Image 1 (cartoon, rainbow, N blue to C red):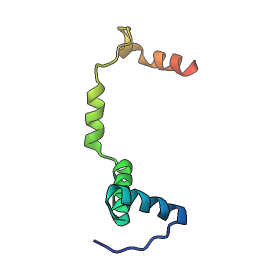
Image 2 (image 1 turned 90 degrees about the vertical axis):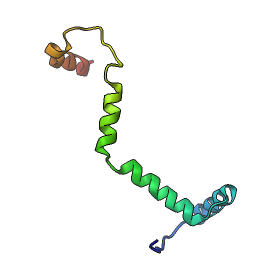
Image 3 (image 1 turned 135 degrees about the vertical axis):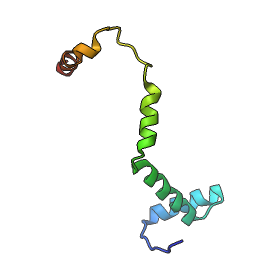
Length: 81
């Protein structure tokens, strides 16, 4: 572990202490978990993005049979609406 110093508002400290007490955790552990959550939500994971994209393939239908040939026209039409 690397020791670091941060400054929090009184309200933040009060809220963190209440959450820590309720969950039987230290304030430091809550902050570490919050940092981990932020890192995961802002880190681009190409494999996860690919998995999620492939998961939706074929789940939606437009009813049109010429999308591959007329996709530009359909896109232009959709953008003007």
